[in-house]
Amino acid sequence: MRLRSHRRSLVVWRQSDGAAGPAGAPPRPRPKRIRRRLRIAVLLTIVGLLPVARAARARWRPLLAGVVLTVAGLVLRSSPAGVVLLPGLLFLLSAPLIPGTPQEDRTRRSELERELAVYSTPAQRRDLEAMFDRYPDGMTYELRDILARQATAADSGRIPGGRRY
Image (cartoon, rainbow, N blue to C red):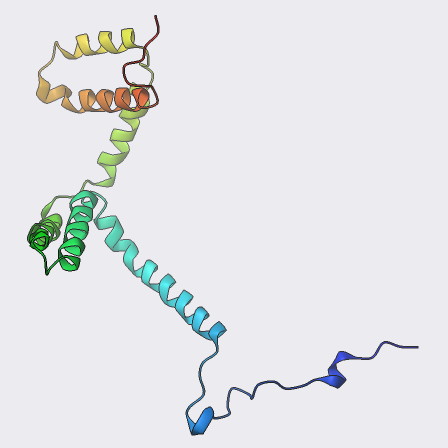
């Protein structure tokens, strides 16, 4: 005794894609096709926006502020809070005027951050800052900025006001 093939009892529940829709209307595209086309469109949009993202790397804060304020101004345009639309547009217009940082500067700064991460204890940091005091601020501002950011990042996990006794 053999199992029956499922293909023999095949029932067509829908018409084929080439058939006309109800009342002679053109056929509707299937949901799978719509989702696939939507995915392709999103991927092409992302690939097209990658150069814009590279250019906006140094300018993301004013761009973000501009987008948030502009959207808030458009949503609230009928109320007095719609005044935030103008500063949002100003942020959006001023963001392209900010100069970007070249790749060499970013790699140099990341190397400096790695080298200065060795000075992790407060005593080591004080010694390093005492050395920086011998030189003008114009020469050491970048190193001081990196140390301040690292100290802030190290203290961010602690409870404010809590210390060891």
